[in-house]
Length: 466
Image (cartoon, rainbow, N blue to C red; front, top):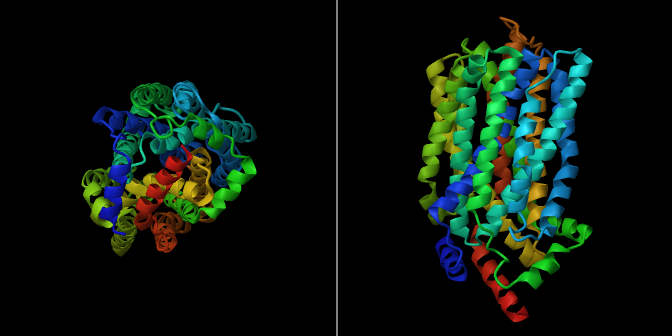
């Protein structure tokens, strides 16, 4: 069945699931809020730890990886909680309301390492980094699940998630362009970082409140209370076994790990590359905007391509374009113009994956329901979230480990030749290798062609059960 035919079936099955502009903006605001923490972790946290608080890069890398791996327990628990939540606000939105203020507080704690001994600093970092992970999980998994509850229409779901990623990238641009100037405006040093993230935390809370108040959960809310109640009580082991029967969830989770590694490394190494390869730390923001601005512009024109070619095909095309961008950078990594051109190409290539990734996960919810008879969107998003976070943790660890391997000295005016090589490996070669892995993972993904028939059969089952 063609993608266009699937779109027609989706439209006919989901006539009532129309999403207004305000609701799309409100949903996107949640990812803007999330990226105040996520973009900070990937872009500045290792730098803050090594150059502001003066702790070991290797120790920081190990803390990040261990914490991300442990975070999987919290992810699964939160997914199960969401699946069992039933309130007048729905199952996902209540958690956005409950966790928006703790989310702001965690942002402040993350960038408030006290001036104490190194071992005490590492204990503080371990504790606060894990607090952030728990709170981030508690709000971000319900936020991800919300997209699968707003609509089942495959194309509208894609548009919703494209808008989400536009807001996400706006958050990334804002954090990367404004963080250092705002830190300096607050006096610089450790105090400047704390004050900057106090302001960012307040903004994030307000954005999450907009998501809560102006979105609506529709899927499963119209005359399906009994059915939903049954599905919310799926035994834990049954739900977990169901995940591994969902081949598309397996593919997307593995891809999420790889994507997390790439994103974390690409964003986290910018400040090092600008400072020690290009010789100008002020180019950190320029590098980021050179990649993210083309990504945002590409996202604005992405929807028609999704409709015509399907999510998987444009994702694969985007990976090829990203690799081309890294190759351009490799031609002359010391030339600012070549590096920026490479960043622009990479940004264009990253747009398809950013735009359709979460929509593909949402689609796998229906496949899992069709395959196992159980709808467990909370568990699906939580387990996939863990894959992504494990990837970002591994990416952060790689930065710390590779820098330590190269003999990087935090805060030094100049670095050794081996440290410079380590930065180049992180900026170019590791992302190329991970991108190739992503391409190979996504080749077997065929859900775009199957989704229309699956959704139709699910509706027929529900009609017979009514």
